[in-house]
Length: 254
Ligand SMILES: [Zn+2]
Image 1 (cartoon, rainbow, N blue to C red):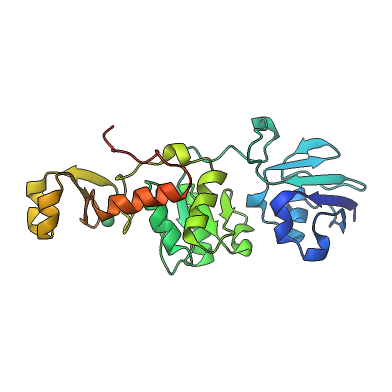
Image 2: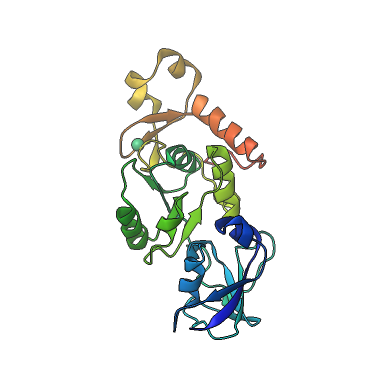
């Protein structure tokens, strides 16, 4: 059973017990254990890891831990772009799609409001979440680290904050999504796509004052909910403003 030294960097320490944070950890790995297995046995979900160095060389999750190894484990770098060959997985999924666990309904709505494809139900089981994530290549959003340790999940994001606005900011910044915000494209309620619709076609469904003040409308292809640039639009602008990223929201036809 090889003895190796592990060091976890930055926020990966949050997954360790306090006395094990930010220090060298001696760890006796099982024979032929992969570095992925050892990292998770120490408490850190593999989805949170972006780079592993074994004795100074970058390795992938399948690397076998050897006697005397010095292993450094890093989360995603916020501002420093490391070359793709060093990463333990492909760069973020090309068009990010999400599946949010049952505690993250408010976050799911906000992601949809900004145009991001986000599956959410308040009764998904862990195995359903894992299966859908793998089949549809969706990033798992959760505060449950055991869920992120499931083998079939390749892309996940451990949500640290409790407040849904802070959660949204965390997801957008970790996956670098500020440039991909697309308002009025997706239904907050059911995640289906929105399409522009003539006012006349939905007039009978609008509150009287709404029809008076607004000209542009969208309808959900799934639940047929009607959207307009009223309170929804203001909430969305407020949300984006709160993220410290004024100016990203705009007319979807611009
Ligand atoms: Zn809908």
